[in-house]
Length: 377
Figure (cartoon, rainbow, N blue to C red):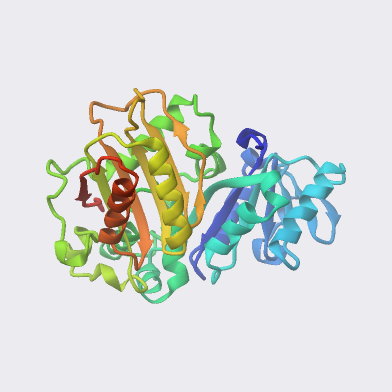
């Protein structure tokens, strides 16, 4: 098996039409941190590279003053990436250690991610990195409610950039953030133009990009998984049972219907009181994503594995399960396993019944799950 550390990470910049994706890309392309990065964009003209151009390599590729290699996508994405790899290996373009892809505003991000993961050639040279999604503070609420692609872009993101906050009033901005948190409770969020944006913060330090010996990565992951329910003393407090385990919180407080997010994209968390059998859980999760992967937009969690003194971090996106990260220590005294799901029209109860039935059929003790609200603060 190819070591993950030897593969080139692929970051995706996504966001709905008019959400500021191009403006973000313009800022990133000037950042010296992208000196060893190749960027696949849709059109040179839209980004406005003239003032930053160092060398035009050919009609589809330019080298910027920052050292970033910028290329336009022609035809299929997989072909464009393979062509970049071939030219890198042949020494026809500067060597790059990271690839960034700009998607179109109407693109569903999941086919792009699956291209990198499933292509028999690409998966031996590239791996998935962080996904960055831009959200329009002025129009984001309407886009998330009416445009399925917008909701899926937000749901899959590892980093969120809320744009145009200087143009939106405070109430509108907070409402959009509430809507975003219904779909993606835990991804770090920047408010542009007020928060500083740099390529290193947005593109690097993804949990599954770093060595499993990295304490920083492990703590970042643990904090992300736990932060959204830490304020609840009782894991059952605030749960709206009538919604089948959907979020209760700001969506209801502000009078919004969380189910309006494009036919039921919602998030929920499960807590497991007892240690889990690692082999059985791994088989079950793989089977779950194989059967319902299209509906499981993301699952992320920290597991208390039977016989292990330290937790194991897991992360899955649709049909893809990332390699587990064996953490060096627990972040605090809480030893419960915790899983956060972001799903599309998939009931929490189905997932709970599936796990319980699998454990019982394999002669293993059942585990008690607790539905835990995901904070939207």
